Amino acid sequence: MNDRQDPYDPYAQEQQLIGYDPYGRPVYGQVPAQPAPGQQQYEQAYEQPYGYDPQGYGQQAYYPQPQQLQQPAAPEYGQQEYPGHQEYPQAPGYGYDTQQSQQWIPQQAAPEPPAAAPAPAPAPEAEPGPSRADRVPEPRRPGGDRSAPDYRTEQFAFIDQPDEESEDVIDWLKFTESRTERREEARRRGRNRVVALIVVLALFVVGGVGYLWYAGKLPFLDGPGQKKDAAAASGPQKRDMIVVHLHNTKKGGTSTALLVDNVTTGKGATVLLPNTLGVAKDDGTAAALGKAVEEGGVGVKDSLDSVLGTHIGGTWRLDTPFLENLVELVGGIETDTDVAVPADDAAKIPAVGQGPKQHLSGAMAVAYATYRGQGEPEAKQLDRLGKVLYGVLRKVPGDAKSATVTVESMGQILDPSLNAQALGTLLSKLGEHAKEGAYRTDVLAVKPDGTLTDDANKNVVKEVLGGSFNAAQASSAPRVGLKDATGDEKTQVTAKAALLNGGYTFVDGGKADKTQPATQITYQDDAQRAKAVEVAKTLGLPETVVKKGENAVNADIVVTLGKDYKPS
Image (tube, rainbow, N blue to C red; front, top):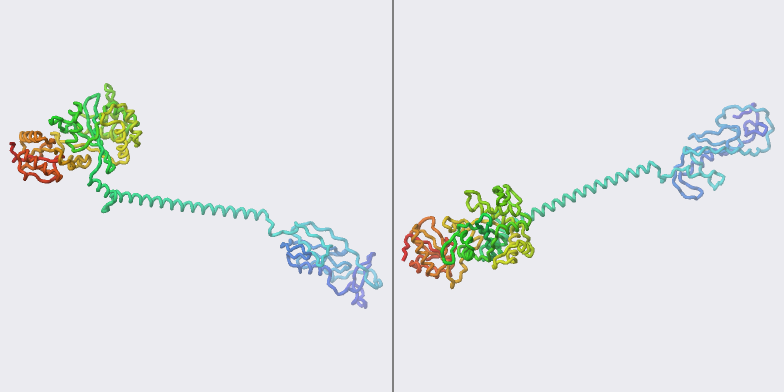
């Protein structure tokens, strides 16, 4: 169907309106059977896949943005719409509108059909539309058509081009990853701390159990340390020992103590001797220890060796002013005080508080060491002296040279038998024992008559002092102890005189707790049996009274007089 007025025109079926001349008159002609250029351009534009570059510029993957494809439009007619709402221009030289194909176009006159269709006038170029992101760029024509419009970079959205949203996502991923790493690191550190704590606790437990096993403190299990101590205790032991006489220059009186370093067992001890302990003078007569020291102390060391069966290496006379200097030199001491000592302004004695861990200066230490309350036994005052000596030893330098300098700085003139170097060396060793806790302090128990108790002989004299006469040589004069179990004082005096006249060293054993009917002579070492038989003959007793046994008195041979003894 066409727009001609005459439907019976023979050219109506062959010719169609193909345009207008410059004067506005319609031009008719035969239309060739070929697709419209706009349709061909549309098909070519969508036949190419995305990312294909027919010009050979490389295959860059991109997603074209929707954009109108613009071509020159036919004069005076609108462009045809295709599916997808994209506008394409009409073929040049044609005035046929698909939207108005059902309408009649009025014509002015029917001119003569031209022999050939004139070339279509070039359509004016359409103005380029705005460069927007929502328009699809026109693909290049195949065959290298350089007349096609060039594409610009901003018309494409490359997938590898970062934008603000992608940077935010990357930052969030980095933050999440770093936070996760920090949590994992915190967990690792926590696990490492737990493992380290478990290892430390395991080592502590193993070390503690090992120490208890070594020391033999585990039940039903003897350690090597305990076996070593037992072997050392059962065998011969080496001891270094000195006697200390403290003279109170303000109030008078003396106090005596033995400082013992057991080299074999590596332990130290202080043994405090009461002034009532009976000792023998050079002439053989008995005397109290305190009185013998106040008289000058000549021969006291040997007398103590005779009574205790020890070997004392030297005598240290320590006056209270020098004790005060010694305490000040070591920087004061710390001890637990059992009583408060009141101040004495006349004697310039400061007050001492009562309680644990009291810090004592030199003057306070002297006041506490020499204090004896009214009605108190002497053992109380000796115990306070022992605490002060222990506190001093804990502060004495562990180095022998430094301890010797401390002794020399004290300014005391020592006994020729004990110089500053020997005293400093002994004090440094005792100080190490005191710092390690391998130290003990004992008060020697003495009976009212000045003799030792059985417990003192067994637990202090033999265990701590090592008092023994077992090693006495057979050719030397034996030490003979005498204990009276007759209940008759005259009988004891007669037996003592007989022993002294026989050339024996006399050791006063005091009185027995109860009487016994028969006299008995005992010895501990087989080497002393012959001497024990001689003692029996000296006293006029038969050989049958001699037997081997534990001595009640610390002496080579002990004579216990019974009621059957009759002085000759």
